[in-house]
Length: 55
Image 1: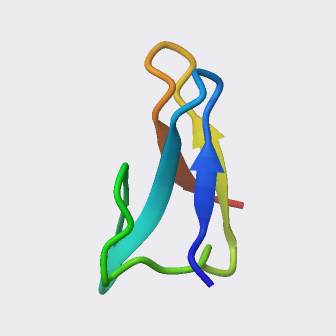
Image 2: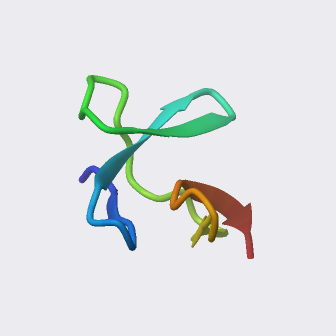
């Protein structure tokens, strides 16, 4: 299942991964992944962009 996050501005972002590199994008692509174990999603309060953070 692909992880998606709706930010405070109403935009939807999808989590993607390449090895140990994780990033969010506005479009769902073939390398979209589920939320990795041990991580949580935080949002940049100024820009509204989601980021992964270790728990």
